[in-house]
Amino acid sequence: MTALPTDALAWGALALGALFVGFAKAGISGTSSIAIVLFAAVMPAKESTGAMLLCLILGDLFAIRYYSRHVEWRLLARLAPWTVLGVVAGALVLDAVDDAVVRPLIGVILLALLALQLVMTYARRGREGTPDLPPLLRHGASAATGTAAGAATMLANAAGPVMVLYLFLAGFTKLQFLGTMAWFFLAVNLFKVPFSVGLGIVDWSTLLLAACLLPAVALGALAGRAVVKRVAQRQFEIWTLAMTAVGAALLIV
Image (cartoon, rainbow, N blue to C red):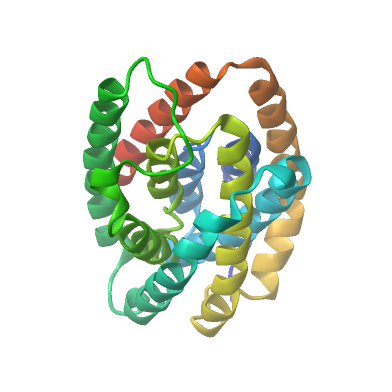
């Protein structure tokens, strides 16, 4: 059973992490990676993964409330079977592989993908993006992204940066990006719950902890929505990619 924090400093770190979760879901993605670090700093690694999962689901619900009309269902349909495969694979190895080993590897991969994103952004400079992948990346991109996102989210709740890079390479607007991310992660995170319960990383005490952190998630979501309304598409992409890089670096450290 998950032990609830007993001191104010731990609760403060968890509340700040929950605020970052809400902000990432409704505003600038990538800050949830900072939350992963904060949760892991005050809780055992696997218990922190379970607590993060429930907070992420709360954040997903806020994001769907704000951006549900902007989802790209066709893209989600392409990703779905591969994401299921990735989640199942991640669940199978979670007991055998310490996520402290997996997270640095994910961080290195994300930094490599970030470099690719910057190259692609430079190559298409001056042209309007469309919600479809460049021909060079189209074949196999859905399979690779879905599998990687499913495995990363099951092992370390770290699939956000994978999807950030995929959707930006597809040329999505900020509202398409946020709406598609919201529905993707709500479905994936709910799918993960039975696996997490079976592995013992989600229980009634985890649910109580997430309920206590709900106000912080809500505050972060409100702040994220306010920021999205005030930034242009270009600034949104820059800040999202910057936070993705920070999150990847934190995973490595």
